[in-house]
Length: 257
Image (tube, rainbow, N blue to C red; front, side, top):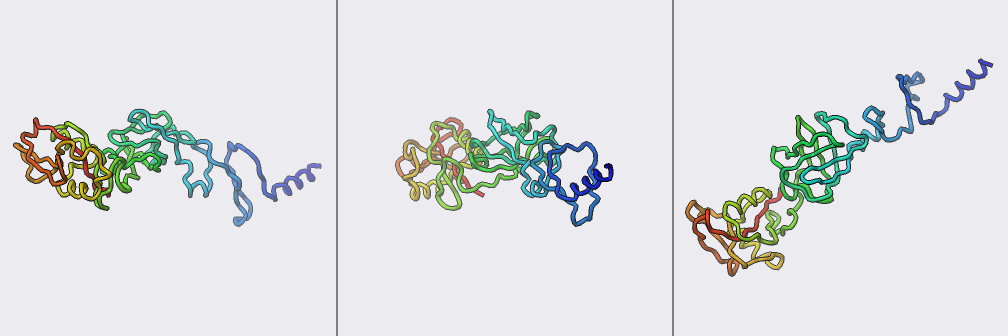
């Protein structure tokens, strides 16, 4: 009887074996090298699960779901992350436009700073709602690897392939406040030639034009006086007086990379 059972077991193992099993000991394949294989593995359920070649190619376990909570990007991975390790690579679909001083938290772990490869925070247009983003954990922070801009940032108009301008202006800002605002958004105050080109080429797409003088970036700006443009026409220009007290409207220009 034992001989019959042994023969039956050998015959059963000679074919393909399919089952849901949990192994708590090493699995050693002793058949011919050309026939040694494990097929039918599913997606990994935890951090110690066996990963198939298909899974390694697709790196599906790096995919996460994202939710922006305040200035923190909360990521949920499957299987869940239990610790941050250098080189941890995660991808997600942005659920909102994101920029500025952002943090990343994975599966409830500590919230850590998100920076571009140059060490600066992401600017407008680099994390756009609906875009696929890729971040890597390195030495206590996350690096945004997918920071390349595609086209103009949101709420801007392409004047040429080289630069974009904001659709609407922001009112009643000091010169230095206006300059800082543009810098924080990844842009700068428009030069007079940029303002004029936008005014001539894409005027119907811009709002608030000629409502008030607008700040511009010009080589004639200095500590006693700064220049403004656009009060009544595309060619309007003046020196506005002391930059610490004079106010004006502003719209930023951007140079996509």
